[in-house]
Length: 377
Image 1 (tube, rainbow, N blue to C red):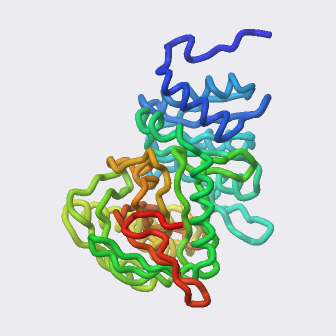
Image 2: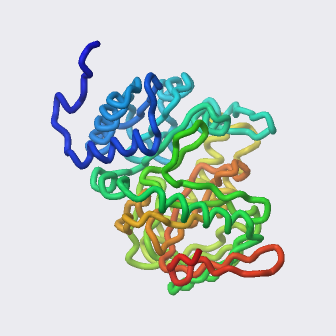
Image 3: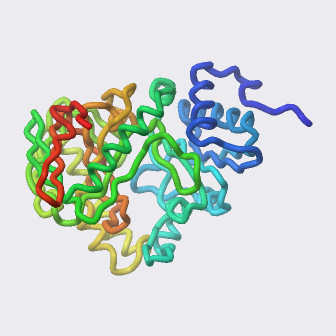
């Protein structure tokens, strides 16, 4: 048997990074002997170095890793054809370690996959996850420090807390949200099932962010109403931003109608308007199906996600991958949702600090499960 050829043999790695990568491969993904592991990254410092460590960890676990590079992509970009082709080879494990985003699937957007129950999915990666043919984690915008800090955590605790919040959100008819910054919002949840990012991605069809640490749900379409004030950080089409002034939004029947505040508000509105403009442009260029431009444009203002942060090692530092996992926060996304029934070109996660969230069940009973940011489960 030939000796393993490791990146660590070329350039000795940070041992804390190597340990976090080992946890990701052996504890989170539970890579087994001879499994194909596709790692897609960019030729950018931190994500490349993390990918080298993941490659080595996968090799040591007995897997068959392949490391693939493409240029950096943002929310409006398409992934390289070669990347989509490699994903289409159906590796048992897929890791997206991107400086910004993996990129959209130009072929599947125009000709979506269809599942047995009739759901249309516009990305090969999402289709493989939906049909339980691969397992995965994705880490958009991750840094070495964030990876080292937030991956080695107590996953048993995370699983318990995530499952408890999942049960609350899935059973609720709606939630009400208030915050010290001024949020006063109602979000309907009827017919929606919550999803877990609990760090257990060991079976086909399971996946999520790494760092892990949230339970999230797609709001019931057309039901969100009230005032929404972001006071932590926001994600934009070309990166994330730590706010120094709140962003104040009005939400009517599920859609953002006004965005007010300082520089952050202006940049968020610019991102929303770019999502609207490019929806029309992409339809004209044949990049999205004919007749869908108006739908994609409208959904650039849709409330697409409610998420609850559950990672005890995460903080708020302007990197949304970690920020949205922080305790004492929720995040609400503007744009596309995870139930694939509100298609948009953008998905902008934005943070609310120290919220009070009350779940209201079909029988009228209430459960305040976040009280000023404190988890009450």
